[in-house]
Length: 399
Image (cartoon, rainbow, N blue to C red; front, side, top):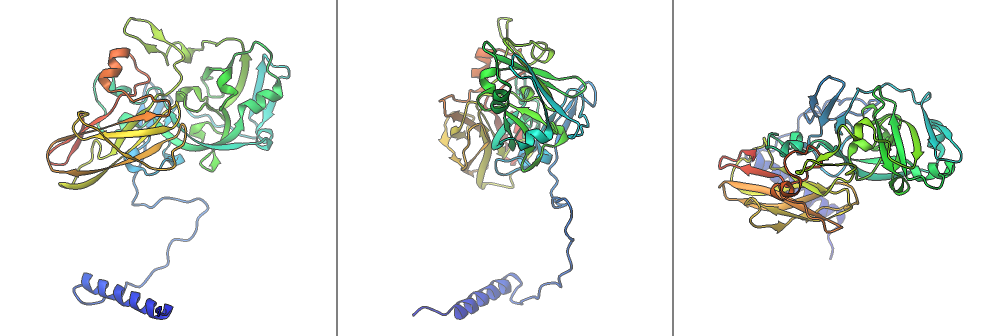
């Protein structure tokens, strides 16, 4: 005969009292009187005990700067908007969306100007995509100078982006035969601009105005940015104000003086748009410390501009031997994928490293394999494997 719900409730209550007594040396203590908590607010805040923050880097001026995502402090695949990395070339402009306009002209039948209200009325989509600066992990090229994962890999983040497919707007304008490129220009003081192949624009490019359920932050291009999935972050032009359709790339300052890859023979690769497969262990990683030998779940994140992550392998001996890590769902195309790997640390020195494989079969190379092809004079598109050293005292460092 089944026990009644009341009897089962009493048994559970008694067990809870027994556990409480064990924890307090046999005496059951009454909980402290509750106090009224903080009232609701107009905009939510995180707990004051959480200290995750972006690490900032200033180059020539405070306006030309960047900030890095603290991957060691995050969970899941979506980066909080407030911790999404930043990269600016002339500071963050203040733009009133009611006054902002998007001009589409050039090789089109009907040049059009769109207000933000008109764009919001068009059919929209929401997609989770990562965004990565072409210079992310550039410190790994000459020597491993970044002490932690935030400084080495922090110029990459992942968000849910909402906006209008660029293909829809271009169809409304009527692209003329022979067109093959666009020029995208921002409204920041330096008029940052990039050329984008038309084929990509007709595939998955967005005119994005939303990020993680709310309006894009000013630092991410408010009120409108071009979002080009899987390609280097600089091409996702922020504060988008103009698109010119043409039959060739424009060769702007930002795609000639930089964002090219210097090769060993002295030539430079240009328009190397895709961000290739990359992974990194975020725990344990540089600057952290294990409390002692025993079980440790190795955690990390992988991504690829070519598509979905299909496999992640981990090694505790610097890549001599490999074992498969567990991939956490959801696994989306061109988005972060979390991986986990069970490890029993015996207290001796270890070298932790991960490598990933995407749906095209591309395998993340080691630093040595990458240098054999690219040399040592590049500054962009570094995707070599990342090794962390765990010392006998549990401290973790970059090697």
